Length: 83
Image 1 (cartoon, rainbow, N blue to C red):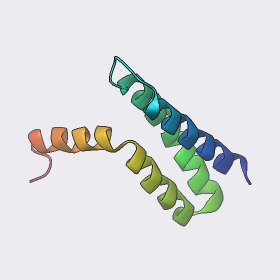
Image 2 (cartoon, one colour):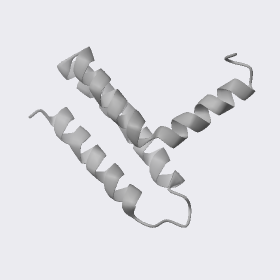
Image 3 (spheres, rainbow, N blue to C red):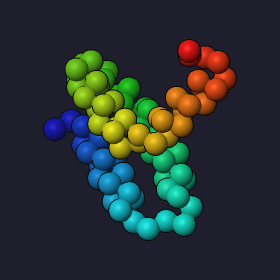
């Protein structure tokens, strides 16, 4: 397995362990860290393995980070970006 897929598996492992741990700060610092690490990792995996693997990783990451995506969609809709 390539380095990018190994790091992606590690990213998913950290995300799932972080999700089950209790947090007083509502998991947002972990979500920001996962986003900051996940975007370049997604680009690297897509570059090395092609768009299909990149899309699978994108869908997997979106399922893990669904609440930040939901809030982003609400924010865009409030700003008038989408009708």
